[in-house]
Length: 267
Image 1 (cartoon, rainbow, N blue to C red):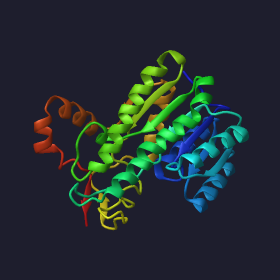
Image 2: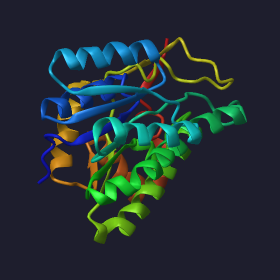
Image 3: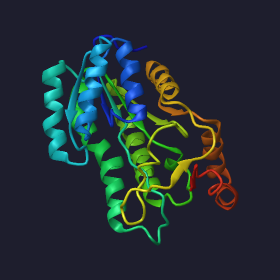
């Protein structure tokens, strides 16, 4: 089982709820933390916060949807922190709009961040991860295996992630690289407050409905699953049931469940 003391963990979307919790959890285990985000002030403040807790952390301002920025950032991480042992593809964005109304640029934006962002980071880190027999942990969603109401662009990006990392896991199986997909379920973060609407603007009237897990609890489960080098972590019972029903009874799922478990309400 891996131990993370003196290992370097790279986290994208590090200033968000789950990203912050993961940085704290792996940092408390003795890891060096490379924080990647596009929010400069939050990145600096969070880096200082981790350092105040005796966690070695360095922030990197980088838009992961831009391959050139990623290609410049990862060598700098290796130079600063000596290695890359774990890559956590955590950055993501969601939308809430019908397919009919959603502009093509919204589809592109979600694919650029959710899919291509993870792809760019994985390619940039791969040789170092292989050399260290490291780990790739990628945040996905129920939308990666089940259709949900008003999530066509988001679901497309998450299905793409599952296709990519399931294939990568097979290719890396005999090379010592662990690849895990994580479906955390509904978590108390700001992701829906920052959801895109059909025209690409940020929604102001969406809230998560139902019981949500805390980012700290999500991070703890991911940490334990990472130690066990799991291939898939589906955290909520709702998500597990959705995964099974959507595969075995797709018509029933589409008629009776896809709208009910969409997870948000409009105020």
